[in-house]
Image 1 (cartoon, rainbow, N blue to C red):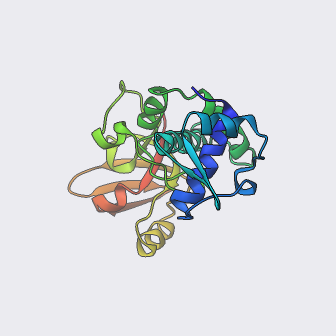
Image 2 (spheres, rainbow, N blue to C red):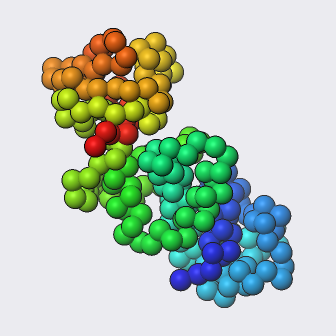
Length: 216
């Protein structure tokens, strides 16, 4: 176990070096100082290394940082999709919540949310074992792809994960927008659904890109 401040440093270091592809990160980008105890903690545990140009992940540090980033973005997704929090407090709340998502709990939440690939801001959520194995925890689903709904199930559109601009334009033209109510009418031979007073049919690709907060 490491301190919350150490986890925040790992998260910032992951974003700088893994996602932004910088070789190292300096103290200002890590929101840390030379005298920071959390920085010393990470160096002592050999999770990071310091070079003349800055810091980088080392040893088990990359896996630890990846887990922190994953928990933070899953927390953002849950706050947005399940609790329907849409304001600027999502990031701040997720920063607090990520520290209590212990191993196993994050996989249960990920499964419940339908294994989201991005956070509400569109940045990737590193996949977990549950995503790779498509594990299922119980029968409770809060958010799922339209393609996974049973005929007759309905809910509000949580978010869209369009694979192309063309698909996004199609969905928008049909009124498939976050917050709108959607109901799956049939799933064969195509996915027939209802939005408002209109019915539309789409193929499996588009049906897998529409995520619904399922009405229980």
